[in-house]
Image (tube, rainbow, N blue to C red):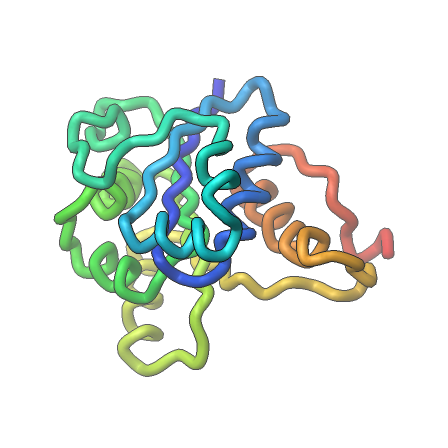
Length: 184
């Protein structure tokens, strides 16, 4: 069974996290855990509502809970997807500042050579952001900006978000059902 941690930070784009969680819920062979920063929870509730946050169908861990299984390299979680990832969280991860569970879990993924997928959402980018992304990429992370595709003529915000989420699932090695370029 695959084990994935989904991290949610305070960057705008909670729809990416929600659609990712909804799609992961459809995969019975994927065990999913969630860690959300305080700002991530605030933004999630602001963008999608309290009901959506309460409806997250997976076990959630407080961002200060260093007893979470994925805080240790001896855990068997194989992938972490941080969606959306703020530049502040990205900077802390890139520079080894593991002062909360989200950054510690990302650090574990890197040190154990497991898959870390970081979904950046901010723009424009300054040189510090770019250097932090470079540092993370050199450490083994996959940087996947939330850049939706439009060639299949999405009709709803969910359709737009799904172009990114389907790509995330593909990067995580999970079968996905979204349209590809050749199918538009």
